[in-house]
Amino acid sequence: MQTVLSGIRPTGNLHLGNYFGAVKNFIKMQEDNNCFFFIADYHSLTTHPKPEDLQENVRKVLSEYLACGLDPEKSTIYIQSDMPQVAELYLLLGMNAYVGELERTTTFKEKIRKQPENVNAGLLTYAVLMAADILIHNAHKVPVGKDQEQHLEMTKKFAKRFNQIYGVDFFNIPDAYNFGENLVKVPGLDGSGKMGKSEGNAISLIDDPKDIRKKVMKAVTDAGPVEKNQTKPEVIENLFSLMKLVSAKDTIDFFNDKYNSCEIRYGDLKKQLAEDVIAFTTPVRERIMDIYNDTDYLNKVMKMGKEKAIESGSKTINEVRKIIGFRPFY
Ligand code: ADP
Ligand code: TRP
Image 1: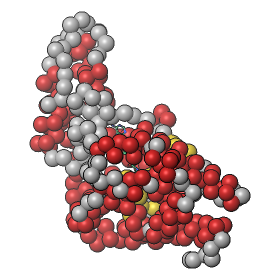
Image 2: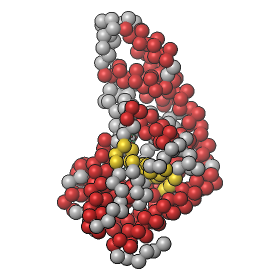
Image 3: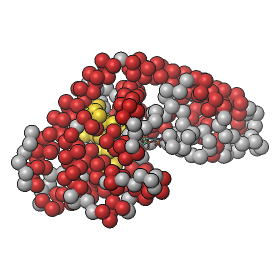
Image 4: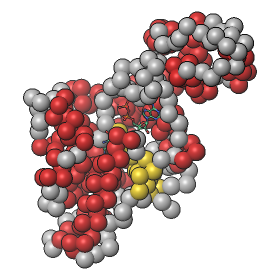
């Protein structure tokens, strides 16, 4: 059985891109893999959140994950900071991570630009903590988006380096995993290509119908087709791609025909798309709210995740300590 691991920072709400691009596949993967899904709250300290926001955001993301169908019985769903073994492995891996290679990381260079007033050591060693997240469970597969590929390359490098320094074959070398034929790119509504939190073009699972209608109606379009059966420009293709995710086949065929015969009214298409998005998100939104308000359930899930994560992490850290020359701790 393969071990799959994925982490998400508790910033913002899950959007359709996260759902169709990642979470939907996680739900399938938990059937036949040993899955670890965690909320990277240590990582989020690099941007200095307020303590009360941190707690709240962790519970929000956890509720969203659970509402989408991640199952705490099948997978290990946990909070990163509930597992001190990660912090210890981070310290140990950090001893063999070189400042030069950390400074060359694209995400670090970007952060220096974005938050020049707060270039903390956590930003510099972001990739070391991420490597600790992955190696603490000796994961085989790590589903990551494009922006995280470099971090995974560094994880491989740190794992190989550790094995080499100590002459062991201890850490598995993890693979970046993209979902193959299930890989979808969810477009944004502004014609920019990809839906993303930071792009400000996202529809969140938690958005209410009014917001969704507003966002969809504002989507960028063009002046309309001028020739029958012409190729769709990207902004229009984007709307159809969103439809493919949430609408019935008949609806898509109907608007395709209208487009091909140059009779399309984008207003009608957007109205229909908004209603189909709402029909898709409403039950999810209701589940998110129910779970979020059920403190006992959330606490139970966190406790269960913490126990399973610690059991797996303690084994790794004991071995690592022995290899390095320390006494085992757990
Ligand atoms: P954001 O771009 O909003 O910051 P994240 O980087 O947190 O999103 O996304 C986490 C994961 O969700 C990504 O690794 C990717 O698998 C998936 N994802 C996010 N946005 C999209 C998208 N527009 N299309 C497909 N998958 C996406
Ligand atoms: N850095 C990832 C992100 O910003 C989140 C993350 C932290 C992660 N640790 C991880 C993802 C380990 C995969 C594996 O999206």
